[in-house]
Length: 196
Image 1 (spheres, rainbow, N blue to C red):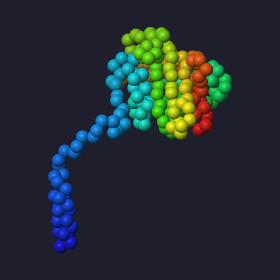
Image 2 (image 1 turned 135 degrees about the vertical axis):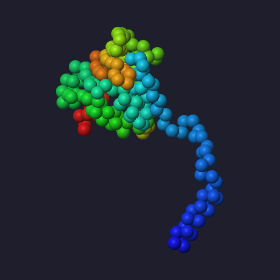
Image 3 (image 1 turned 180 degrees about the vertical axis):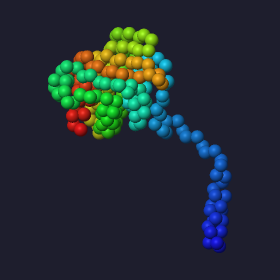
Image 4 (image 1 turned 90 degrees about the vertical axis):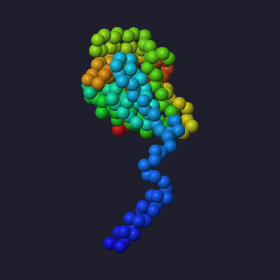
């Protein structure tokens, strides 16, 4: 009993000397934590903001929350022929997140993705109640973080967005063609999935 009393007194003395344990702590300076802002996807276009922030972030939540449970990826014919059907079959949100995880493991430097032009506009936009189809360019810029040159994947794709129970989500990403000499996202996705 005496030992327990001594231990409690020692703990209380330590707490008293360090100040009140209920004092508020000093605020963290801005930018010390990974910021992962979520935009409530009230419009179909908001999906691309969340996909981009989830792609850049060390966390996956924004990207994953932006995918419809029925999400699928469709490669362009040239990537399908080069990498084989097995690299792309049964593409689900789980497969997409696995590939995203591989991207984040390999490219530990800066990552960026742009949908549409600099203002987020697409060449074709068909927006109706509850769904939208956007067709236009995208560009991924990936840095391995080892001093090597950045890698760019770019193409023209058709993005199908639908309204879900918690806002709009991406249900289909279909690569249509490459953009210049850059490989497409399908080349990256299929290669990373095939190496699994």
